Image 1: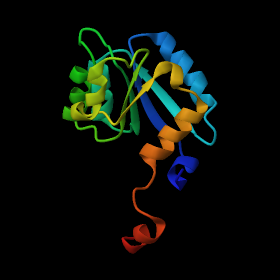
Image 2 (image 1 turned 30 degrees about the vertical axis):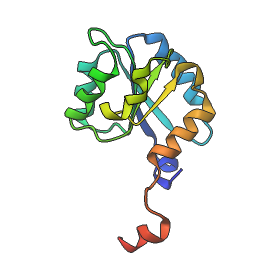
Image 3 (image 1 turned 135 degrees about the vertical axis):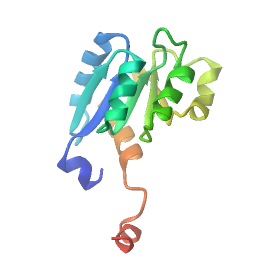
Image 4 (image 1 turned 120 degrees about the vertical axis):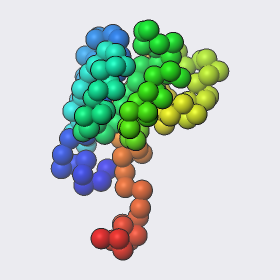
Length: 143
């Protein structure tokens, strides 16, 4: 992880219509080694759009199905249209649908099964999607 993540918290927005998922994810995030994570929860895409417009969100975990929408193919584009440019991860208890192969076409960056989420997976996701994209040498050239 970069120095930003170790010195301040990473703000993750969980969008899920089941409040129990918030409790479960919060416990799992607490076990993520080296991560200082602040988890915010909303249960509807409208609230999520307001959150990302307000700023301060570093990453989004988006439940595949949120009523009244069908799935992430309708909700992820709404976050992008609202101006959110950070990573969006689709979470679902069932990733078997063939449409999950198209997640990037709808503005998502990754997908993960809810049962796969644990401290190790969270640490990997955080380091993969929030690390500096430039090497240390290259980044210094632009300071």
